[in-house]
Length: 389
Image (tube, rainbow, N blue to C red):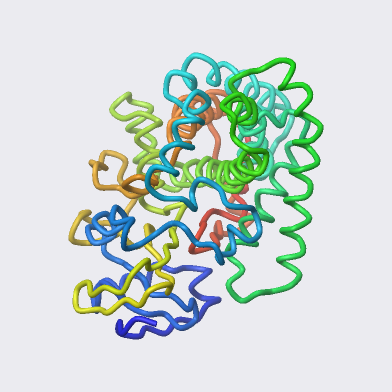
């Protein structure tokens, strides 16, 4: 391992709330080794942004990593020309033009249908009632797996997320992850004859038409599902909670001084649904006085960088008028999130305005207690109980 200073954590407390520990790490040292995570962590925003671009030093290629082993070698686990080639292949499915001209109408149609069912509810959980199906229906459309039920989409996404974060090697978590990837393969098998006959703009179709191998196609579909369900789900419900918890910020939107997109982007900085990105050290090197050894693992802690006091004023506060050019919410460098435009459209242009338009007096159900969050690699609210009025 590296000779970085050691910082110990309580892994359960870190899952409940990583920010106090991350704040101490940033103050004491920008790079540290955390034994409980068996990784060296980069915690400062500018250091993360700078070093994430150094693919010759910090490689995304991790042949022995959990994601590669459980889901196949997807485009996120490739660097350089190989990564860019596959990213270019999927562009017809996730480009701003495709999102605006094709997917947005589908997002609106699906979201309105979900809201029509919620009108009869007096109260409920925004995560399960709204965010989960909205995110899943959008992902079904983009991936091409329209034969998958939205609840199964959520299940397999969460199962893979749990699997690739299973640092402790829990056999039950790994077994469930394998069951989830098998479910995705089954649904892909069912859809292949249809997309071969009737090509479309879905990821499954554009990758097939571009000549990607079956293994590459499946691995990239699993990648899209692993991040494309839980992150929008958590960002939708989390942003709703943030605005209801901070009515002064919601007023800026209602007065047309800010947009729903401003709220979504600030939430993604503040809470960081994607809290971490792993890398493999590709060669021995010294950075900032720390010696890194080839093939050891490091984590770029986006959730820490997005609360860096040297970059963001009052970083622990939700402020939707904040300038967010330095945010690492969607990553940085060559591995900037390919689904960013779809997420922005789905959440900032469709889900949030339609929800608050349908329920203009929506409020938190305080009888259910405070909203609890969980996770540090991927983070979101466990439930957001509301009264639908």
